[in-house]
Image (cartoon, rainbow, N blue to C red; front, side, top):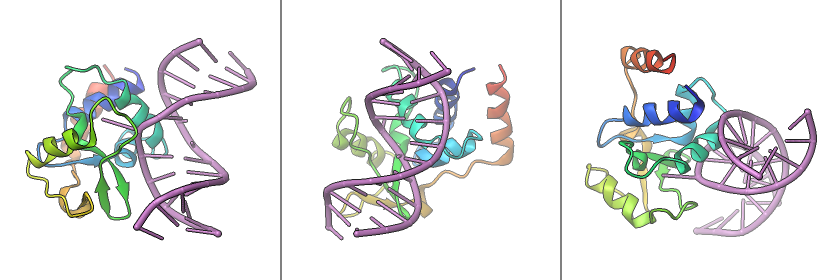
Length: 118
DNA sequence: CTACTGACTGATC
DNA sequence: TGATCAGCCAGTA
């Protein structure tokens, strides 16, 4: 299973209403400094694949921010998807990571790691 | 193998 | 409040 597929698997495991920033995804994949590669992977996400890519966001200090680099989907669309799941944005389009960052159980991570070896 | 490209991040100015 | 810079990494040519 290559890096991209791992990113997809992990992203699929993010529960509604929760998010992960690129750096966190990379860290959970045991590659703490591959945040940029994570962005590349999500950019390659097949449209229509069962991957909630909108739950992966950028990070500014202790806040989450929707990335504007890729225009396959607009910032507004991604924001609407997250708001539909309960994420509240402030006037600057940011939201506190402390409140929305997903913190998976060790057991859940183990299950995901299991899929990686397949 | 080398070179280049990004949905990144944190530090610096 | 921005804008820039430099490390970092996987995928592609």
